[in-house]
Image 1 (cartoon, rainbow, N blue to C red):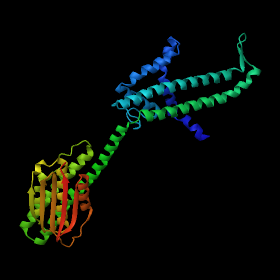
Image 2: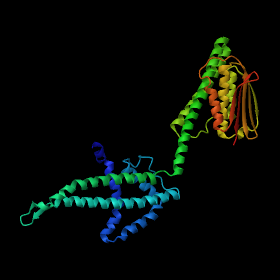
Image 3: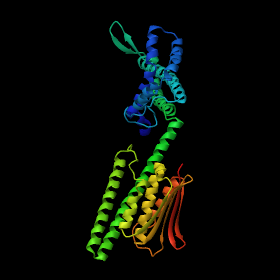
Image 4: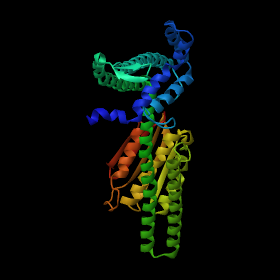
Length: 388
């Protein structure tokens, strides 16, 4: 019983009925001027061109959110769109919605009014009025009509609840997002997830590189015992730490401002900074660059920079101060990155394996491929990224 009565304790039950009542107010006012059946036909025809107006979708969407879902105009259910109609499909669905709302509103108001009249008549039928003495008296022969009152009230309650559920279902169907809008929302959600993954890789690459350089430089300075070498090591640690702080601030700025452009991220044209940082940490880096590096598209160049950064970080972390050969080539619509260093015993360190996964993920997201592993006595990272 409590479950059956629960809808009548919710305000949205009555606002849905009000929503249907509003749909027939203006034709009903016309009926007070002239009672003709064709007025409803004229009203239905007049709604068709109104539904073709783009702004009408906003008006109906806001009204539906407020009265059908119980949400305010500024928030509410994302299942009901408040954006103006953008396509003819949106306009067509809005016309169907307006016609359906008028028809269902007419039926609901008519049935509700008739049930109210029957209820009042059933209550008053057993009683008469003595007009001379101004008092009510019971008419025994009509007392059976009181038994109709619970039935008519129950029918009225079912009408109010059922019509509210029906108009809400129609609103979700006809005022909800179109397939194109659902696809756009899905793509936006996918982009957000990819952006979070990219930011996680950014932090891993940038902060991991800075910490690796700092640890290697500090260890080398302690072992060398040379004041001049220690001074250079401290300079390298300071420069790398400052660059990492800049990267951290930029990433946090992207998190705070979702529409902030990513053009400020470093590209391969700034690879000298990475190479000098690796050399300052003791690695002997031999570089071979060929091709027009400045013509590489921004996304490819930015991801290439991070791949190079992670590769050099892995050299310092797991191989130490060893010779490394870096080849960066742009040719035949492909960016090729190759980093090789002699195989040595792994130096224990945190994050083993996550950097290589990040390199492969970056390459895959850009439609390229990466090979990592031993090759002819060296450890090799070979990445090819398409420029298109």
